[in-house]
Image (cartoon, rainbow, N blue to C red; front, side, top):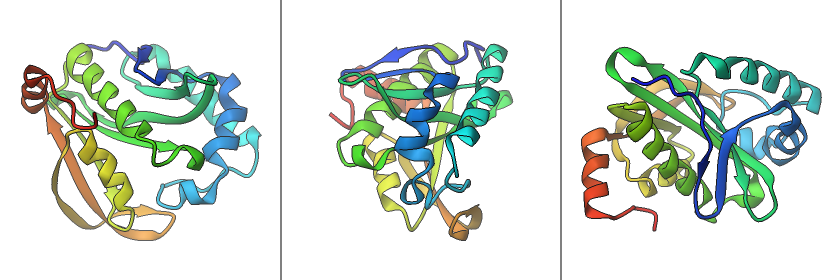
Length: 194
């Protein structure tokens, strides 16, 4: 595994880049304070932008290590930070990562998150050299699973009562993509979400 850290990635509509403390207002306004966005997440809505700022200070301090991967999702059209996508769990010994993501509600349903997830998959396989990428979602939040499907992930199954989020103890559906599947997709020149 290459400890390349969070580098800038550009897609057709997005810039994925390291977060900064200056992103606190956008993050707080667009998703961190919204109970609808955090409904199926493991953390509650932020009560104020100061909590968001403190979290961002912690994240920024971790970038130098090279094994911390957390991107701001920037909408190119406006320069606004509309969400984030990150490696929430990294198992270096086997080259595996679990991805998590969230985004402001007004940007849902536009294919933005699959676009970001595809770009992160490319980076983690090609640049970091991972062998497996997975993601999980509360079974009561199938739209999150649809993002994973659009990014070429395969549904592996449901881990019963294996997660805890703002809804309590929940069943988690796991999706994944292996390096070999990603390579095959690249050879074919297709991307699931396009």
